[in-house]
Length: 614
Image 1 (cartoon, rainbow, N blue to C red):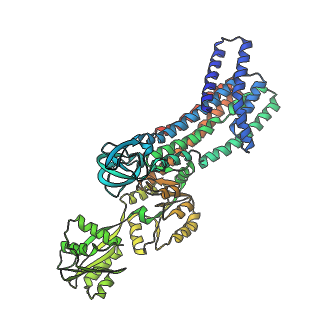
Image 2: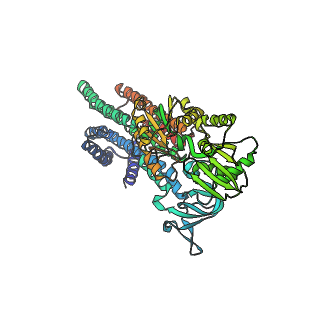
Image 3: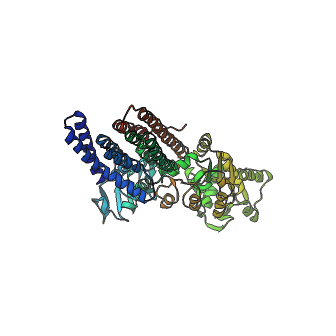
């Protein structure tokens, strides 16, 4: 409603000024019309200034109100109209830029289909998207966009998730995988069981977070507000001093007209708003400008190992057969033994064996000893899989060379599973939590951006922690930590060294994320806990987004500081023109109106941002 009224007011102000300067109105009616229009425009400014004062806040509207009242009292009707034109334009510009930022995110909502195919009672029916319920089986064919979050129950497809995560390559989805609303089936077809619909989908949550972020203030915006309060106070005092010395009401009015700082009040939040929207389109959800600025200024990063630096999934690093056994023999024995266990190491070895297309027989008998290993019988022959102590208990000897090879693998940070057959060592399989491919590069980029400390925290033992920390280039690490130990570490000396960013998975590390100056959750897509726990959520598992977002924050800060410089320079020029009596009240109002757009246009550059990491 207010936007519509401001549009009408702007049109009225422009028409009246045009008629005034064209000389189509005689002096009498001209003054009456200008007075009426300027008075109408002054009312909302006076109300805004009153509300701000009531809330114990000094705003630019207070300075504008004084200038407007002074213009009306001195019958500077054209100056009053110019001030209103300036303020109305600034309000409409603010509406426009806010709408543009919201549109960039809300455009994602248009990607959801209005009509959805649902499987009911053996039939496929088409229903409106709003009627889809949790538990419905949604049919997704090649070229379709998903309307819900859900779990694939049948089929296989390549899904383009760029609308949520920013990743360029499609992701393969099969039964058991999660899929999300607004994503596109590039090829293949799926039947998806809806788990979240409507406002509960990941997409809707992202849109809500970004919209809420628009109300958050960055520190630089807070600084701008404080500066505005001091600036307005000093301007009023200085103007009164000028009037006392020169007794010139026109000079006083001109100074007030030049000094209005409404452009900064719009330009600074506009810069951060545009940056948050840009980040969201890359799959990085920032809950407020303060967190973007916090990332830009941070020099200490603390990262959880499992699920952040590593994938949190064990993978086979080596399969080493013993003398007298082939690699295929080793894997066949291992596959048979691990096929009866649900232990994560057993699952990773079995996956590796199946991936190598090694055939193995089903065990005839098996016994699993928790924490030690598995004993099976295979074609009447005993087969063991487990730790070195387990084999020792079963009287399977290791030669000095075999024991040395096992210990070297353990020293390298691997978990070692020994395989024995017929009372002899058949070899061993080394597994480890897989390091994310881009972890080392991302940490190197952080250091290049001036981050002086990257600490890794983990509950794993010192041997594993040291291996991973050295592999990725972490500056320090802490091992064998419980969740409370991680909190104590952040509260300790490292937390007092400067702004601290904690990077975790958003679930197990929720308390640490909340305690840090900025908490960053990795791979938050589909996880409400991760999105809620963190200040910044990376929708995909890409640590490289951290240095990119830091670079974005620094670029945005630079634009905001440029806004201050532009504003300061044009105001200095305006003051010189006023004090030199080159322009009067009407010229000062026109000057302020024109130069108001300089910092605003500078901030608008962020709406067409193609930032490269340097």
